[in-house]
Length: 572
Image (cartoon, rainbow, N blue to C red; front, side):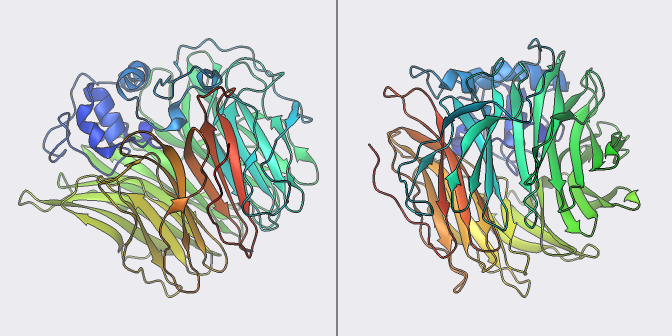
């Protein structure tokens, strides 16, 4: 396996310390982990990773996934919380440094979906009874929860989902949700599926105008393989039954992205490999009320030596149209490929959007977002060798407006560095956008694009060379171009792990300095953020307190329109 293969398998992971890459032991894990970043050194953790391919011992995805599961557990105790075993976190004696990656050999139980009524548990508690109080911190989950995701509609109602443990559920980590209703607050945590097999890679998407939502997750419901499941939500009728959308027995589905429109039409894309862990390909299925989910279709035909496709990213354009991008690899190169969809004609055909021109560059982590009606914004990371022993890492962007622009914008640049994190981006749909990323020196960076389409100068939100970044910085932006950036970091002396935030002023276009999002006892990591056009914002994260608590829990802060995110007093 060369340095390009299977790079998407670690798509959402982010190392506790960028510099800790040099301490990796397994070459297979080195590749899988390094490729979550734009570029990194080889097994020794330094230098140009174009200079030597990965160890040939990692010759199949089987070794990259199945065997590296134990390697990640033993060698990468600093990976993000997305890989933590939730069940282990439910014990107060558990250690956050102990990671457990789900084994592909887990024995699945028979599939049994949760009913539409869901399983009720005790209501979430809150540190403040004042609905809409921007200083309130709410606990929205039972103990034993992690890896939360959140989305919000234009009415200010939000859904948070996570994997965790809940009373009355079967088996291991289940998919659980809680809804925030503006004016009422958070409701009761509810079970979205009740299969005994463990859930992973959960995502939630909300159509802003209608409040319709779709949750997507992977689950070990087939022998030796992850299946892809979805569950649709409509405000008038609630949650539909869980549905499996990939139908290849024994196939492995990863990194599904699903979107839904105001009429309830939905579209899903994912990377899938056959049971023998051969080539990964990009697949899709669409949903209509009349026909249900369609048979999956292949979106590309990358039949070249070493061809692999992964890391899909999907965006609605409106009017029944959508775009997808993904990493396309083969012949020791990685390109960014794309395909377009219309409700009337289906998928148009794949094409290379950004080409890898040779061994002196490396593309990674394409992220596609809606940028207004008929428009999209693509951001990605790129590492370039300058040919004289020097190199640079950049965050780049490309726009779509009834066709892809030829120009590529430089959003951020780190000259002389071989590592930046996967980028995140958000748009207010009116031309203003924001992008964020992390640097190898532990700095958090951001840049904004004005309504005229021009990117500004990159800003340092968190200075480098102090405190270790724990998560990829996430960003959201509202209709007035006010932004909110969140991340987690660990102090240099390893005594605190907290979640932080920084505000973007829509009126001045400038970022404020970072501040504590919370001051809770214990570890507060992996914050996620969402915003709507009206200016409502919501942040969720998980907190683990090893001092006598029942386990990790999902916390939330909701900032209504007209309020500014601000620090909160310490909690007992």
